[in-house]
Length: 100
Length: 197
Image (cartoon, rainbow over all chains, first blue to last red; front, side):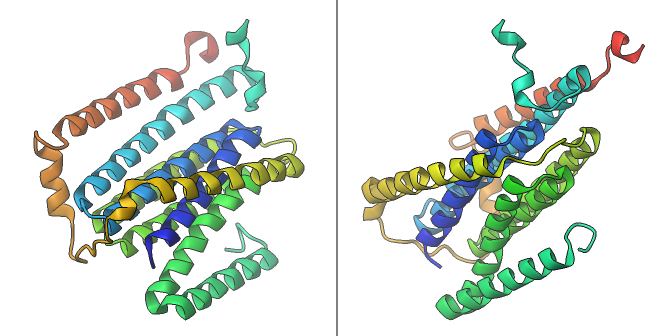
């Protein structure tokens, strides 16, 4: 399979993740959408590393993206649990006190 | 599978995966079949994350996406990346999300399908157009495809991560970032005295 096939999968994953972040009204699903975005990014790095030389660079960047995904999951889940425990809801629209 | 999916849903998933394998095999043989399977697993998992109401099913779909991307990494001859993705993403992050799904209250209502579908119908053409424009205009088009060897790449990546002229600084920053995230998660998640009482 060529580079275009992998890019199509990556674009589909990115669009689904972005839609999940924008359209879902639950903090856990927003975090899941962010994970989809990062998975799409790491797939693009790996695909370009495979098909356009400099193989090590792209794979190392994909590893860094994986680290960022892990950090986002750890901190994100902790923050979500904290705010849900404080307010009893996981709807993002309920957390608007910073605007006041 | 019957605990996560109903019989009809399981049949639809199995039929879709079989169709993806057959189409991929017709296009590019064995590699195409594997690509079709893993690509559908990744994209289908992402779609299930978007439309699923249950937290547990959404996290299971996310794990399916991670497994699909792991297979795609294998097809891209990135064995170290595939193993790392399987262990950290599908294993560690998936477990963390399962824990979060267990701790969160159930949603009173599912996703607004009209809102989700309209957002998807807006975003997909924009992303596709942006990707097409980037693919048309980027300078990498002038470079020919490089067939990387199918041998393991762990040694080269290890050397690149500790080489000061390559990624040693980024590697150390990633380590610091992980430690900071660990401490931040502990601070955020612990109960205060008021909450405990």
